[in-house]
Length: 230
Ligand code: IPE
Ligand code: IPE
Ligand code: MG
Image (tube, rainbow, N blue to C red; front, side, top):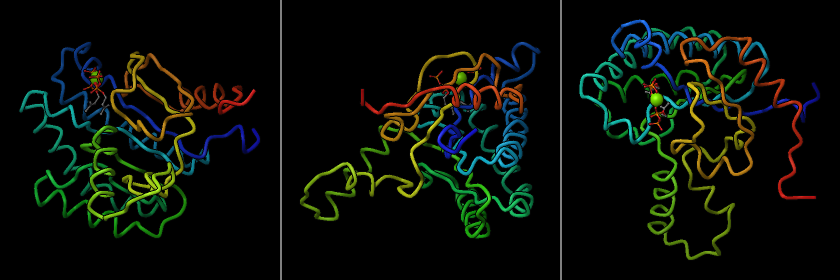
């Protein structure tokens, strides 16, 4: 595959944990636990395949509407995995970044997040962008708010607005994979996905593996991106 046929940034909507658990008559949180393992595996696979940026949708601004017990279960997993896996990520030369409105999380989680980001900030093999309490509409609103607060009177260009997004240095996703069989974006990377290629997988996220990632890459490699040109 030539470089233009290989994505620099792969984004993933990790969907289907609940249905994976339901199929096995297990609680939803067990599905999320299996989802964490799939994420760990996917980071390894993405690095091995040479993907430079991997972003994953871990928790949306709308996911607070779920049962308190499920949200608490997710927070618990988040804590456990963050604390337990930072060292491993660091050894893999992965830079971990969190994107979203992190200020709503308890102090201890924000502390672990800050430590993880600081420790791995100079790693250059792969950037792993974990979108947590992320919403594309919220991100655009936050950018507008920051522009107003900065007193910037324009001109209002795309580049100017982009500079106020959560991770302006991260290139737009080239390929967005959604597992779980749904064909929707659910408020992920709204600004950034204007020309992103999509790959929808019927697999539930905990079943996502290297061969499905490779299938997505092969599908991507066969596409022609035109950006509005003839
Ligand atoms: C995705 O899996 C994980 C999160 C949204 C946190 P779901 O929990 O949405 O799984 P389904 O869609 O109910 O199967
Ligand atoms: C999208 O999945 C959010 C994450 C994977 C974190 P959802 O399960 O929340 O999306 P909808 O509700 O099916 O659109
Ligand atoms: Mg879902």
